[in-house]
Length: 177
Ligand SMILES: [Cu+2]
Image (cartoon, rainbow, N blue to C red; front, side, top):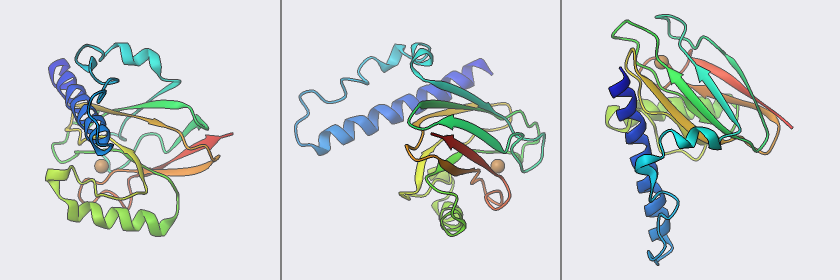
């Protein structure tokens, strides 16, 4: 359990490092690329001190639902959302995607595209509406994502895009100004 949690965290860190590196490369000069991520190999626990807020989220037992469907954050703060998949049914694989809207049409667009994205992409489509996402969490596994809460107060939808879940497994992040 601890090992797999670590592995997941490490994978996310690696992905983040790669993203930073690629972003830096996009600028053309790699001389100072990834300076923020260079020491990420040992910063797994140190990072916990750097966020403004940590939120823990779980599924509702073995149902296709989050146990908490309303979360709160302050505009612009850094949030780490830890998703503990406490389900024990093998079918209850979940993830968390946070969108920059609660617009039904966008939810539908992302939900539909997520199914097309497939398992290799963790059912996460390439869509600008996605602020952040976790990887898939098998039952018993914990995954997480860190993001900056939108500057604009309002209601932002989070959802699970494991096949068959997106239309019903949703919640709202309430951003307060
Ligand atoms: Cu789910």
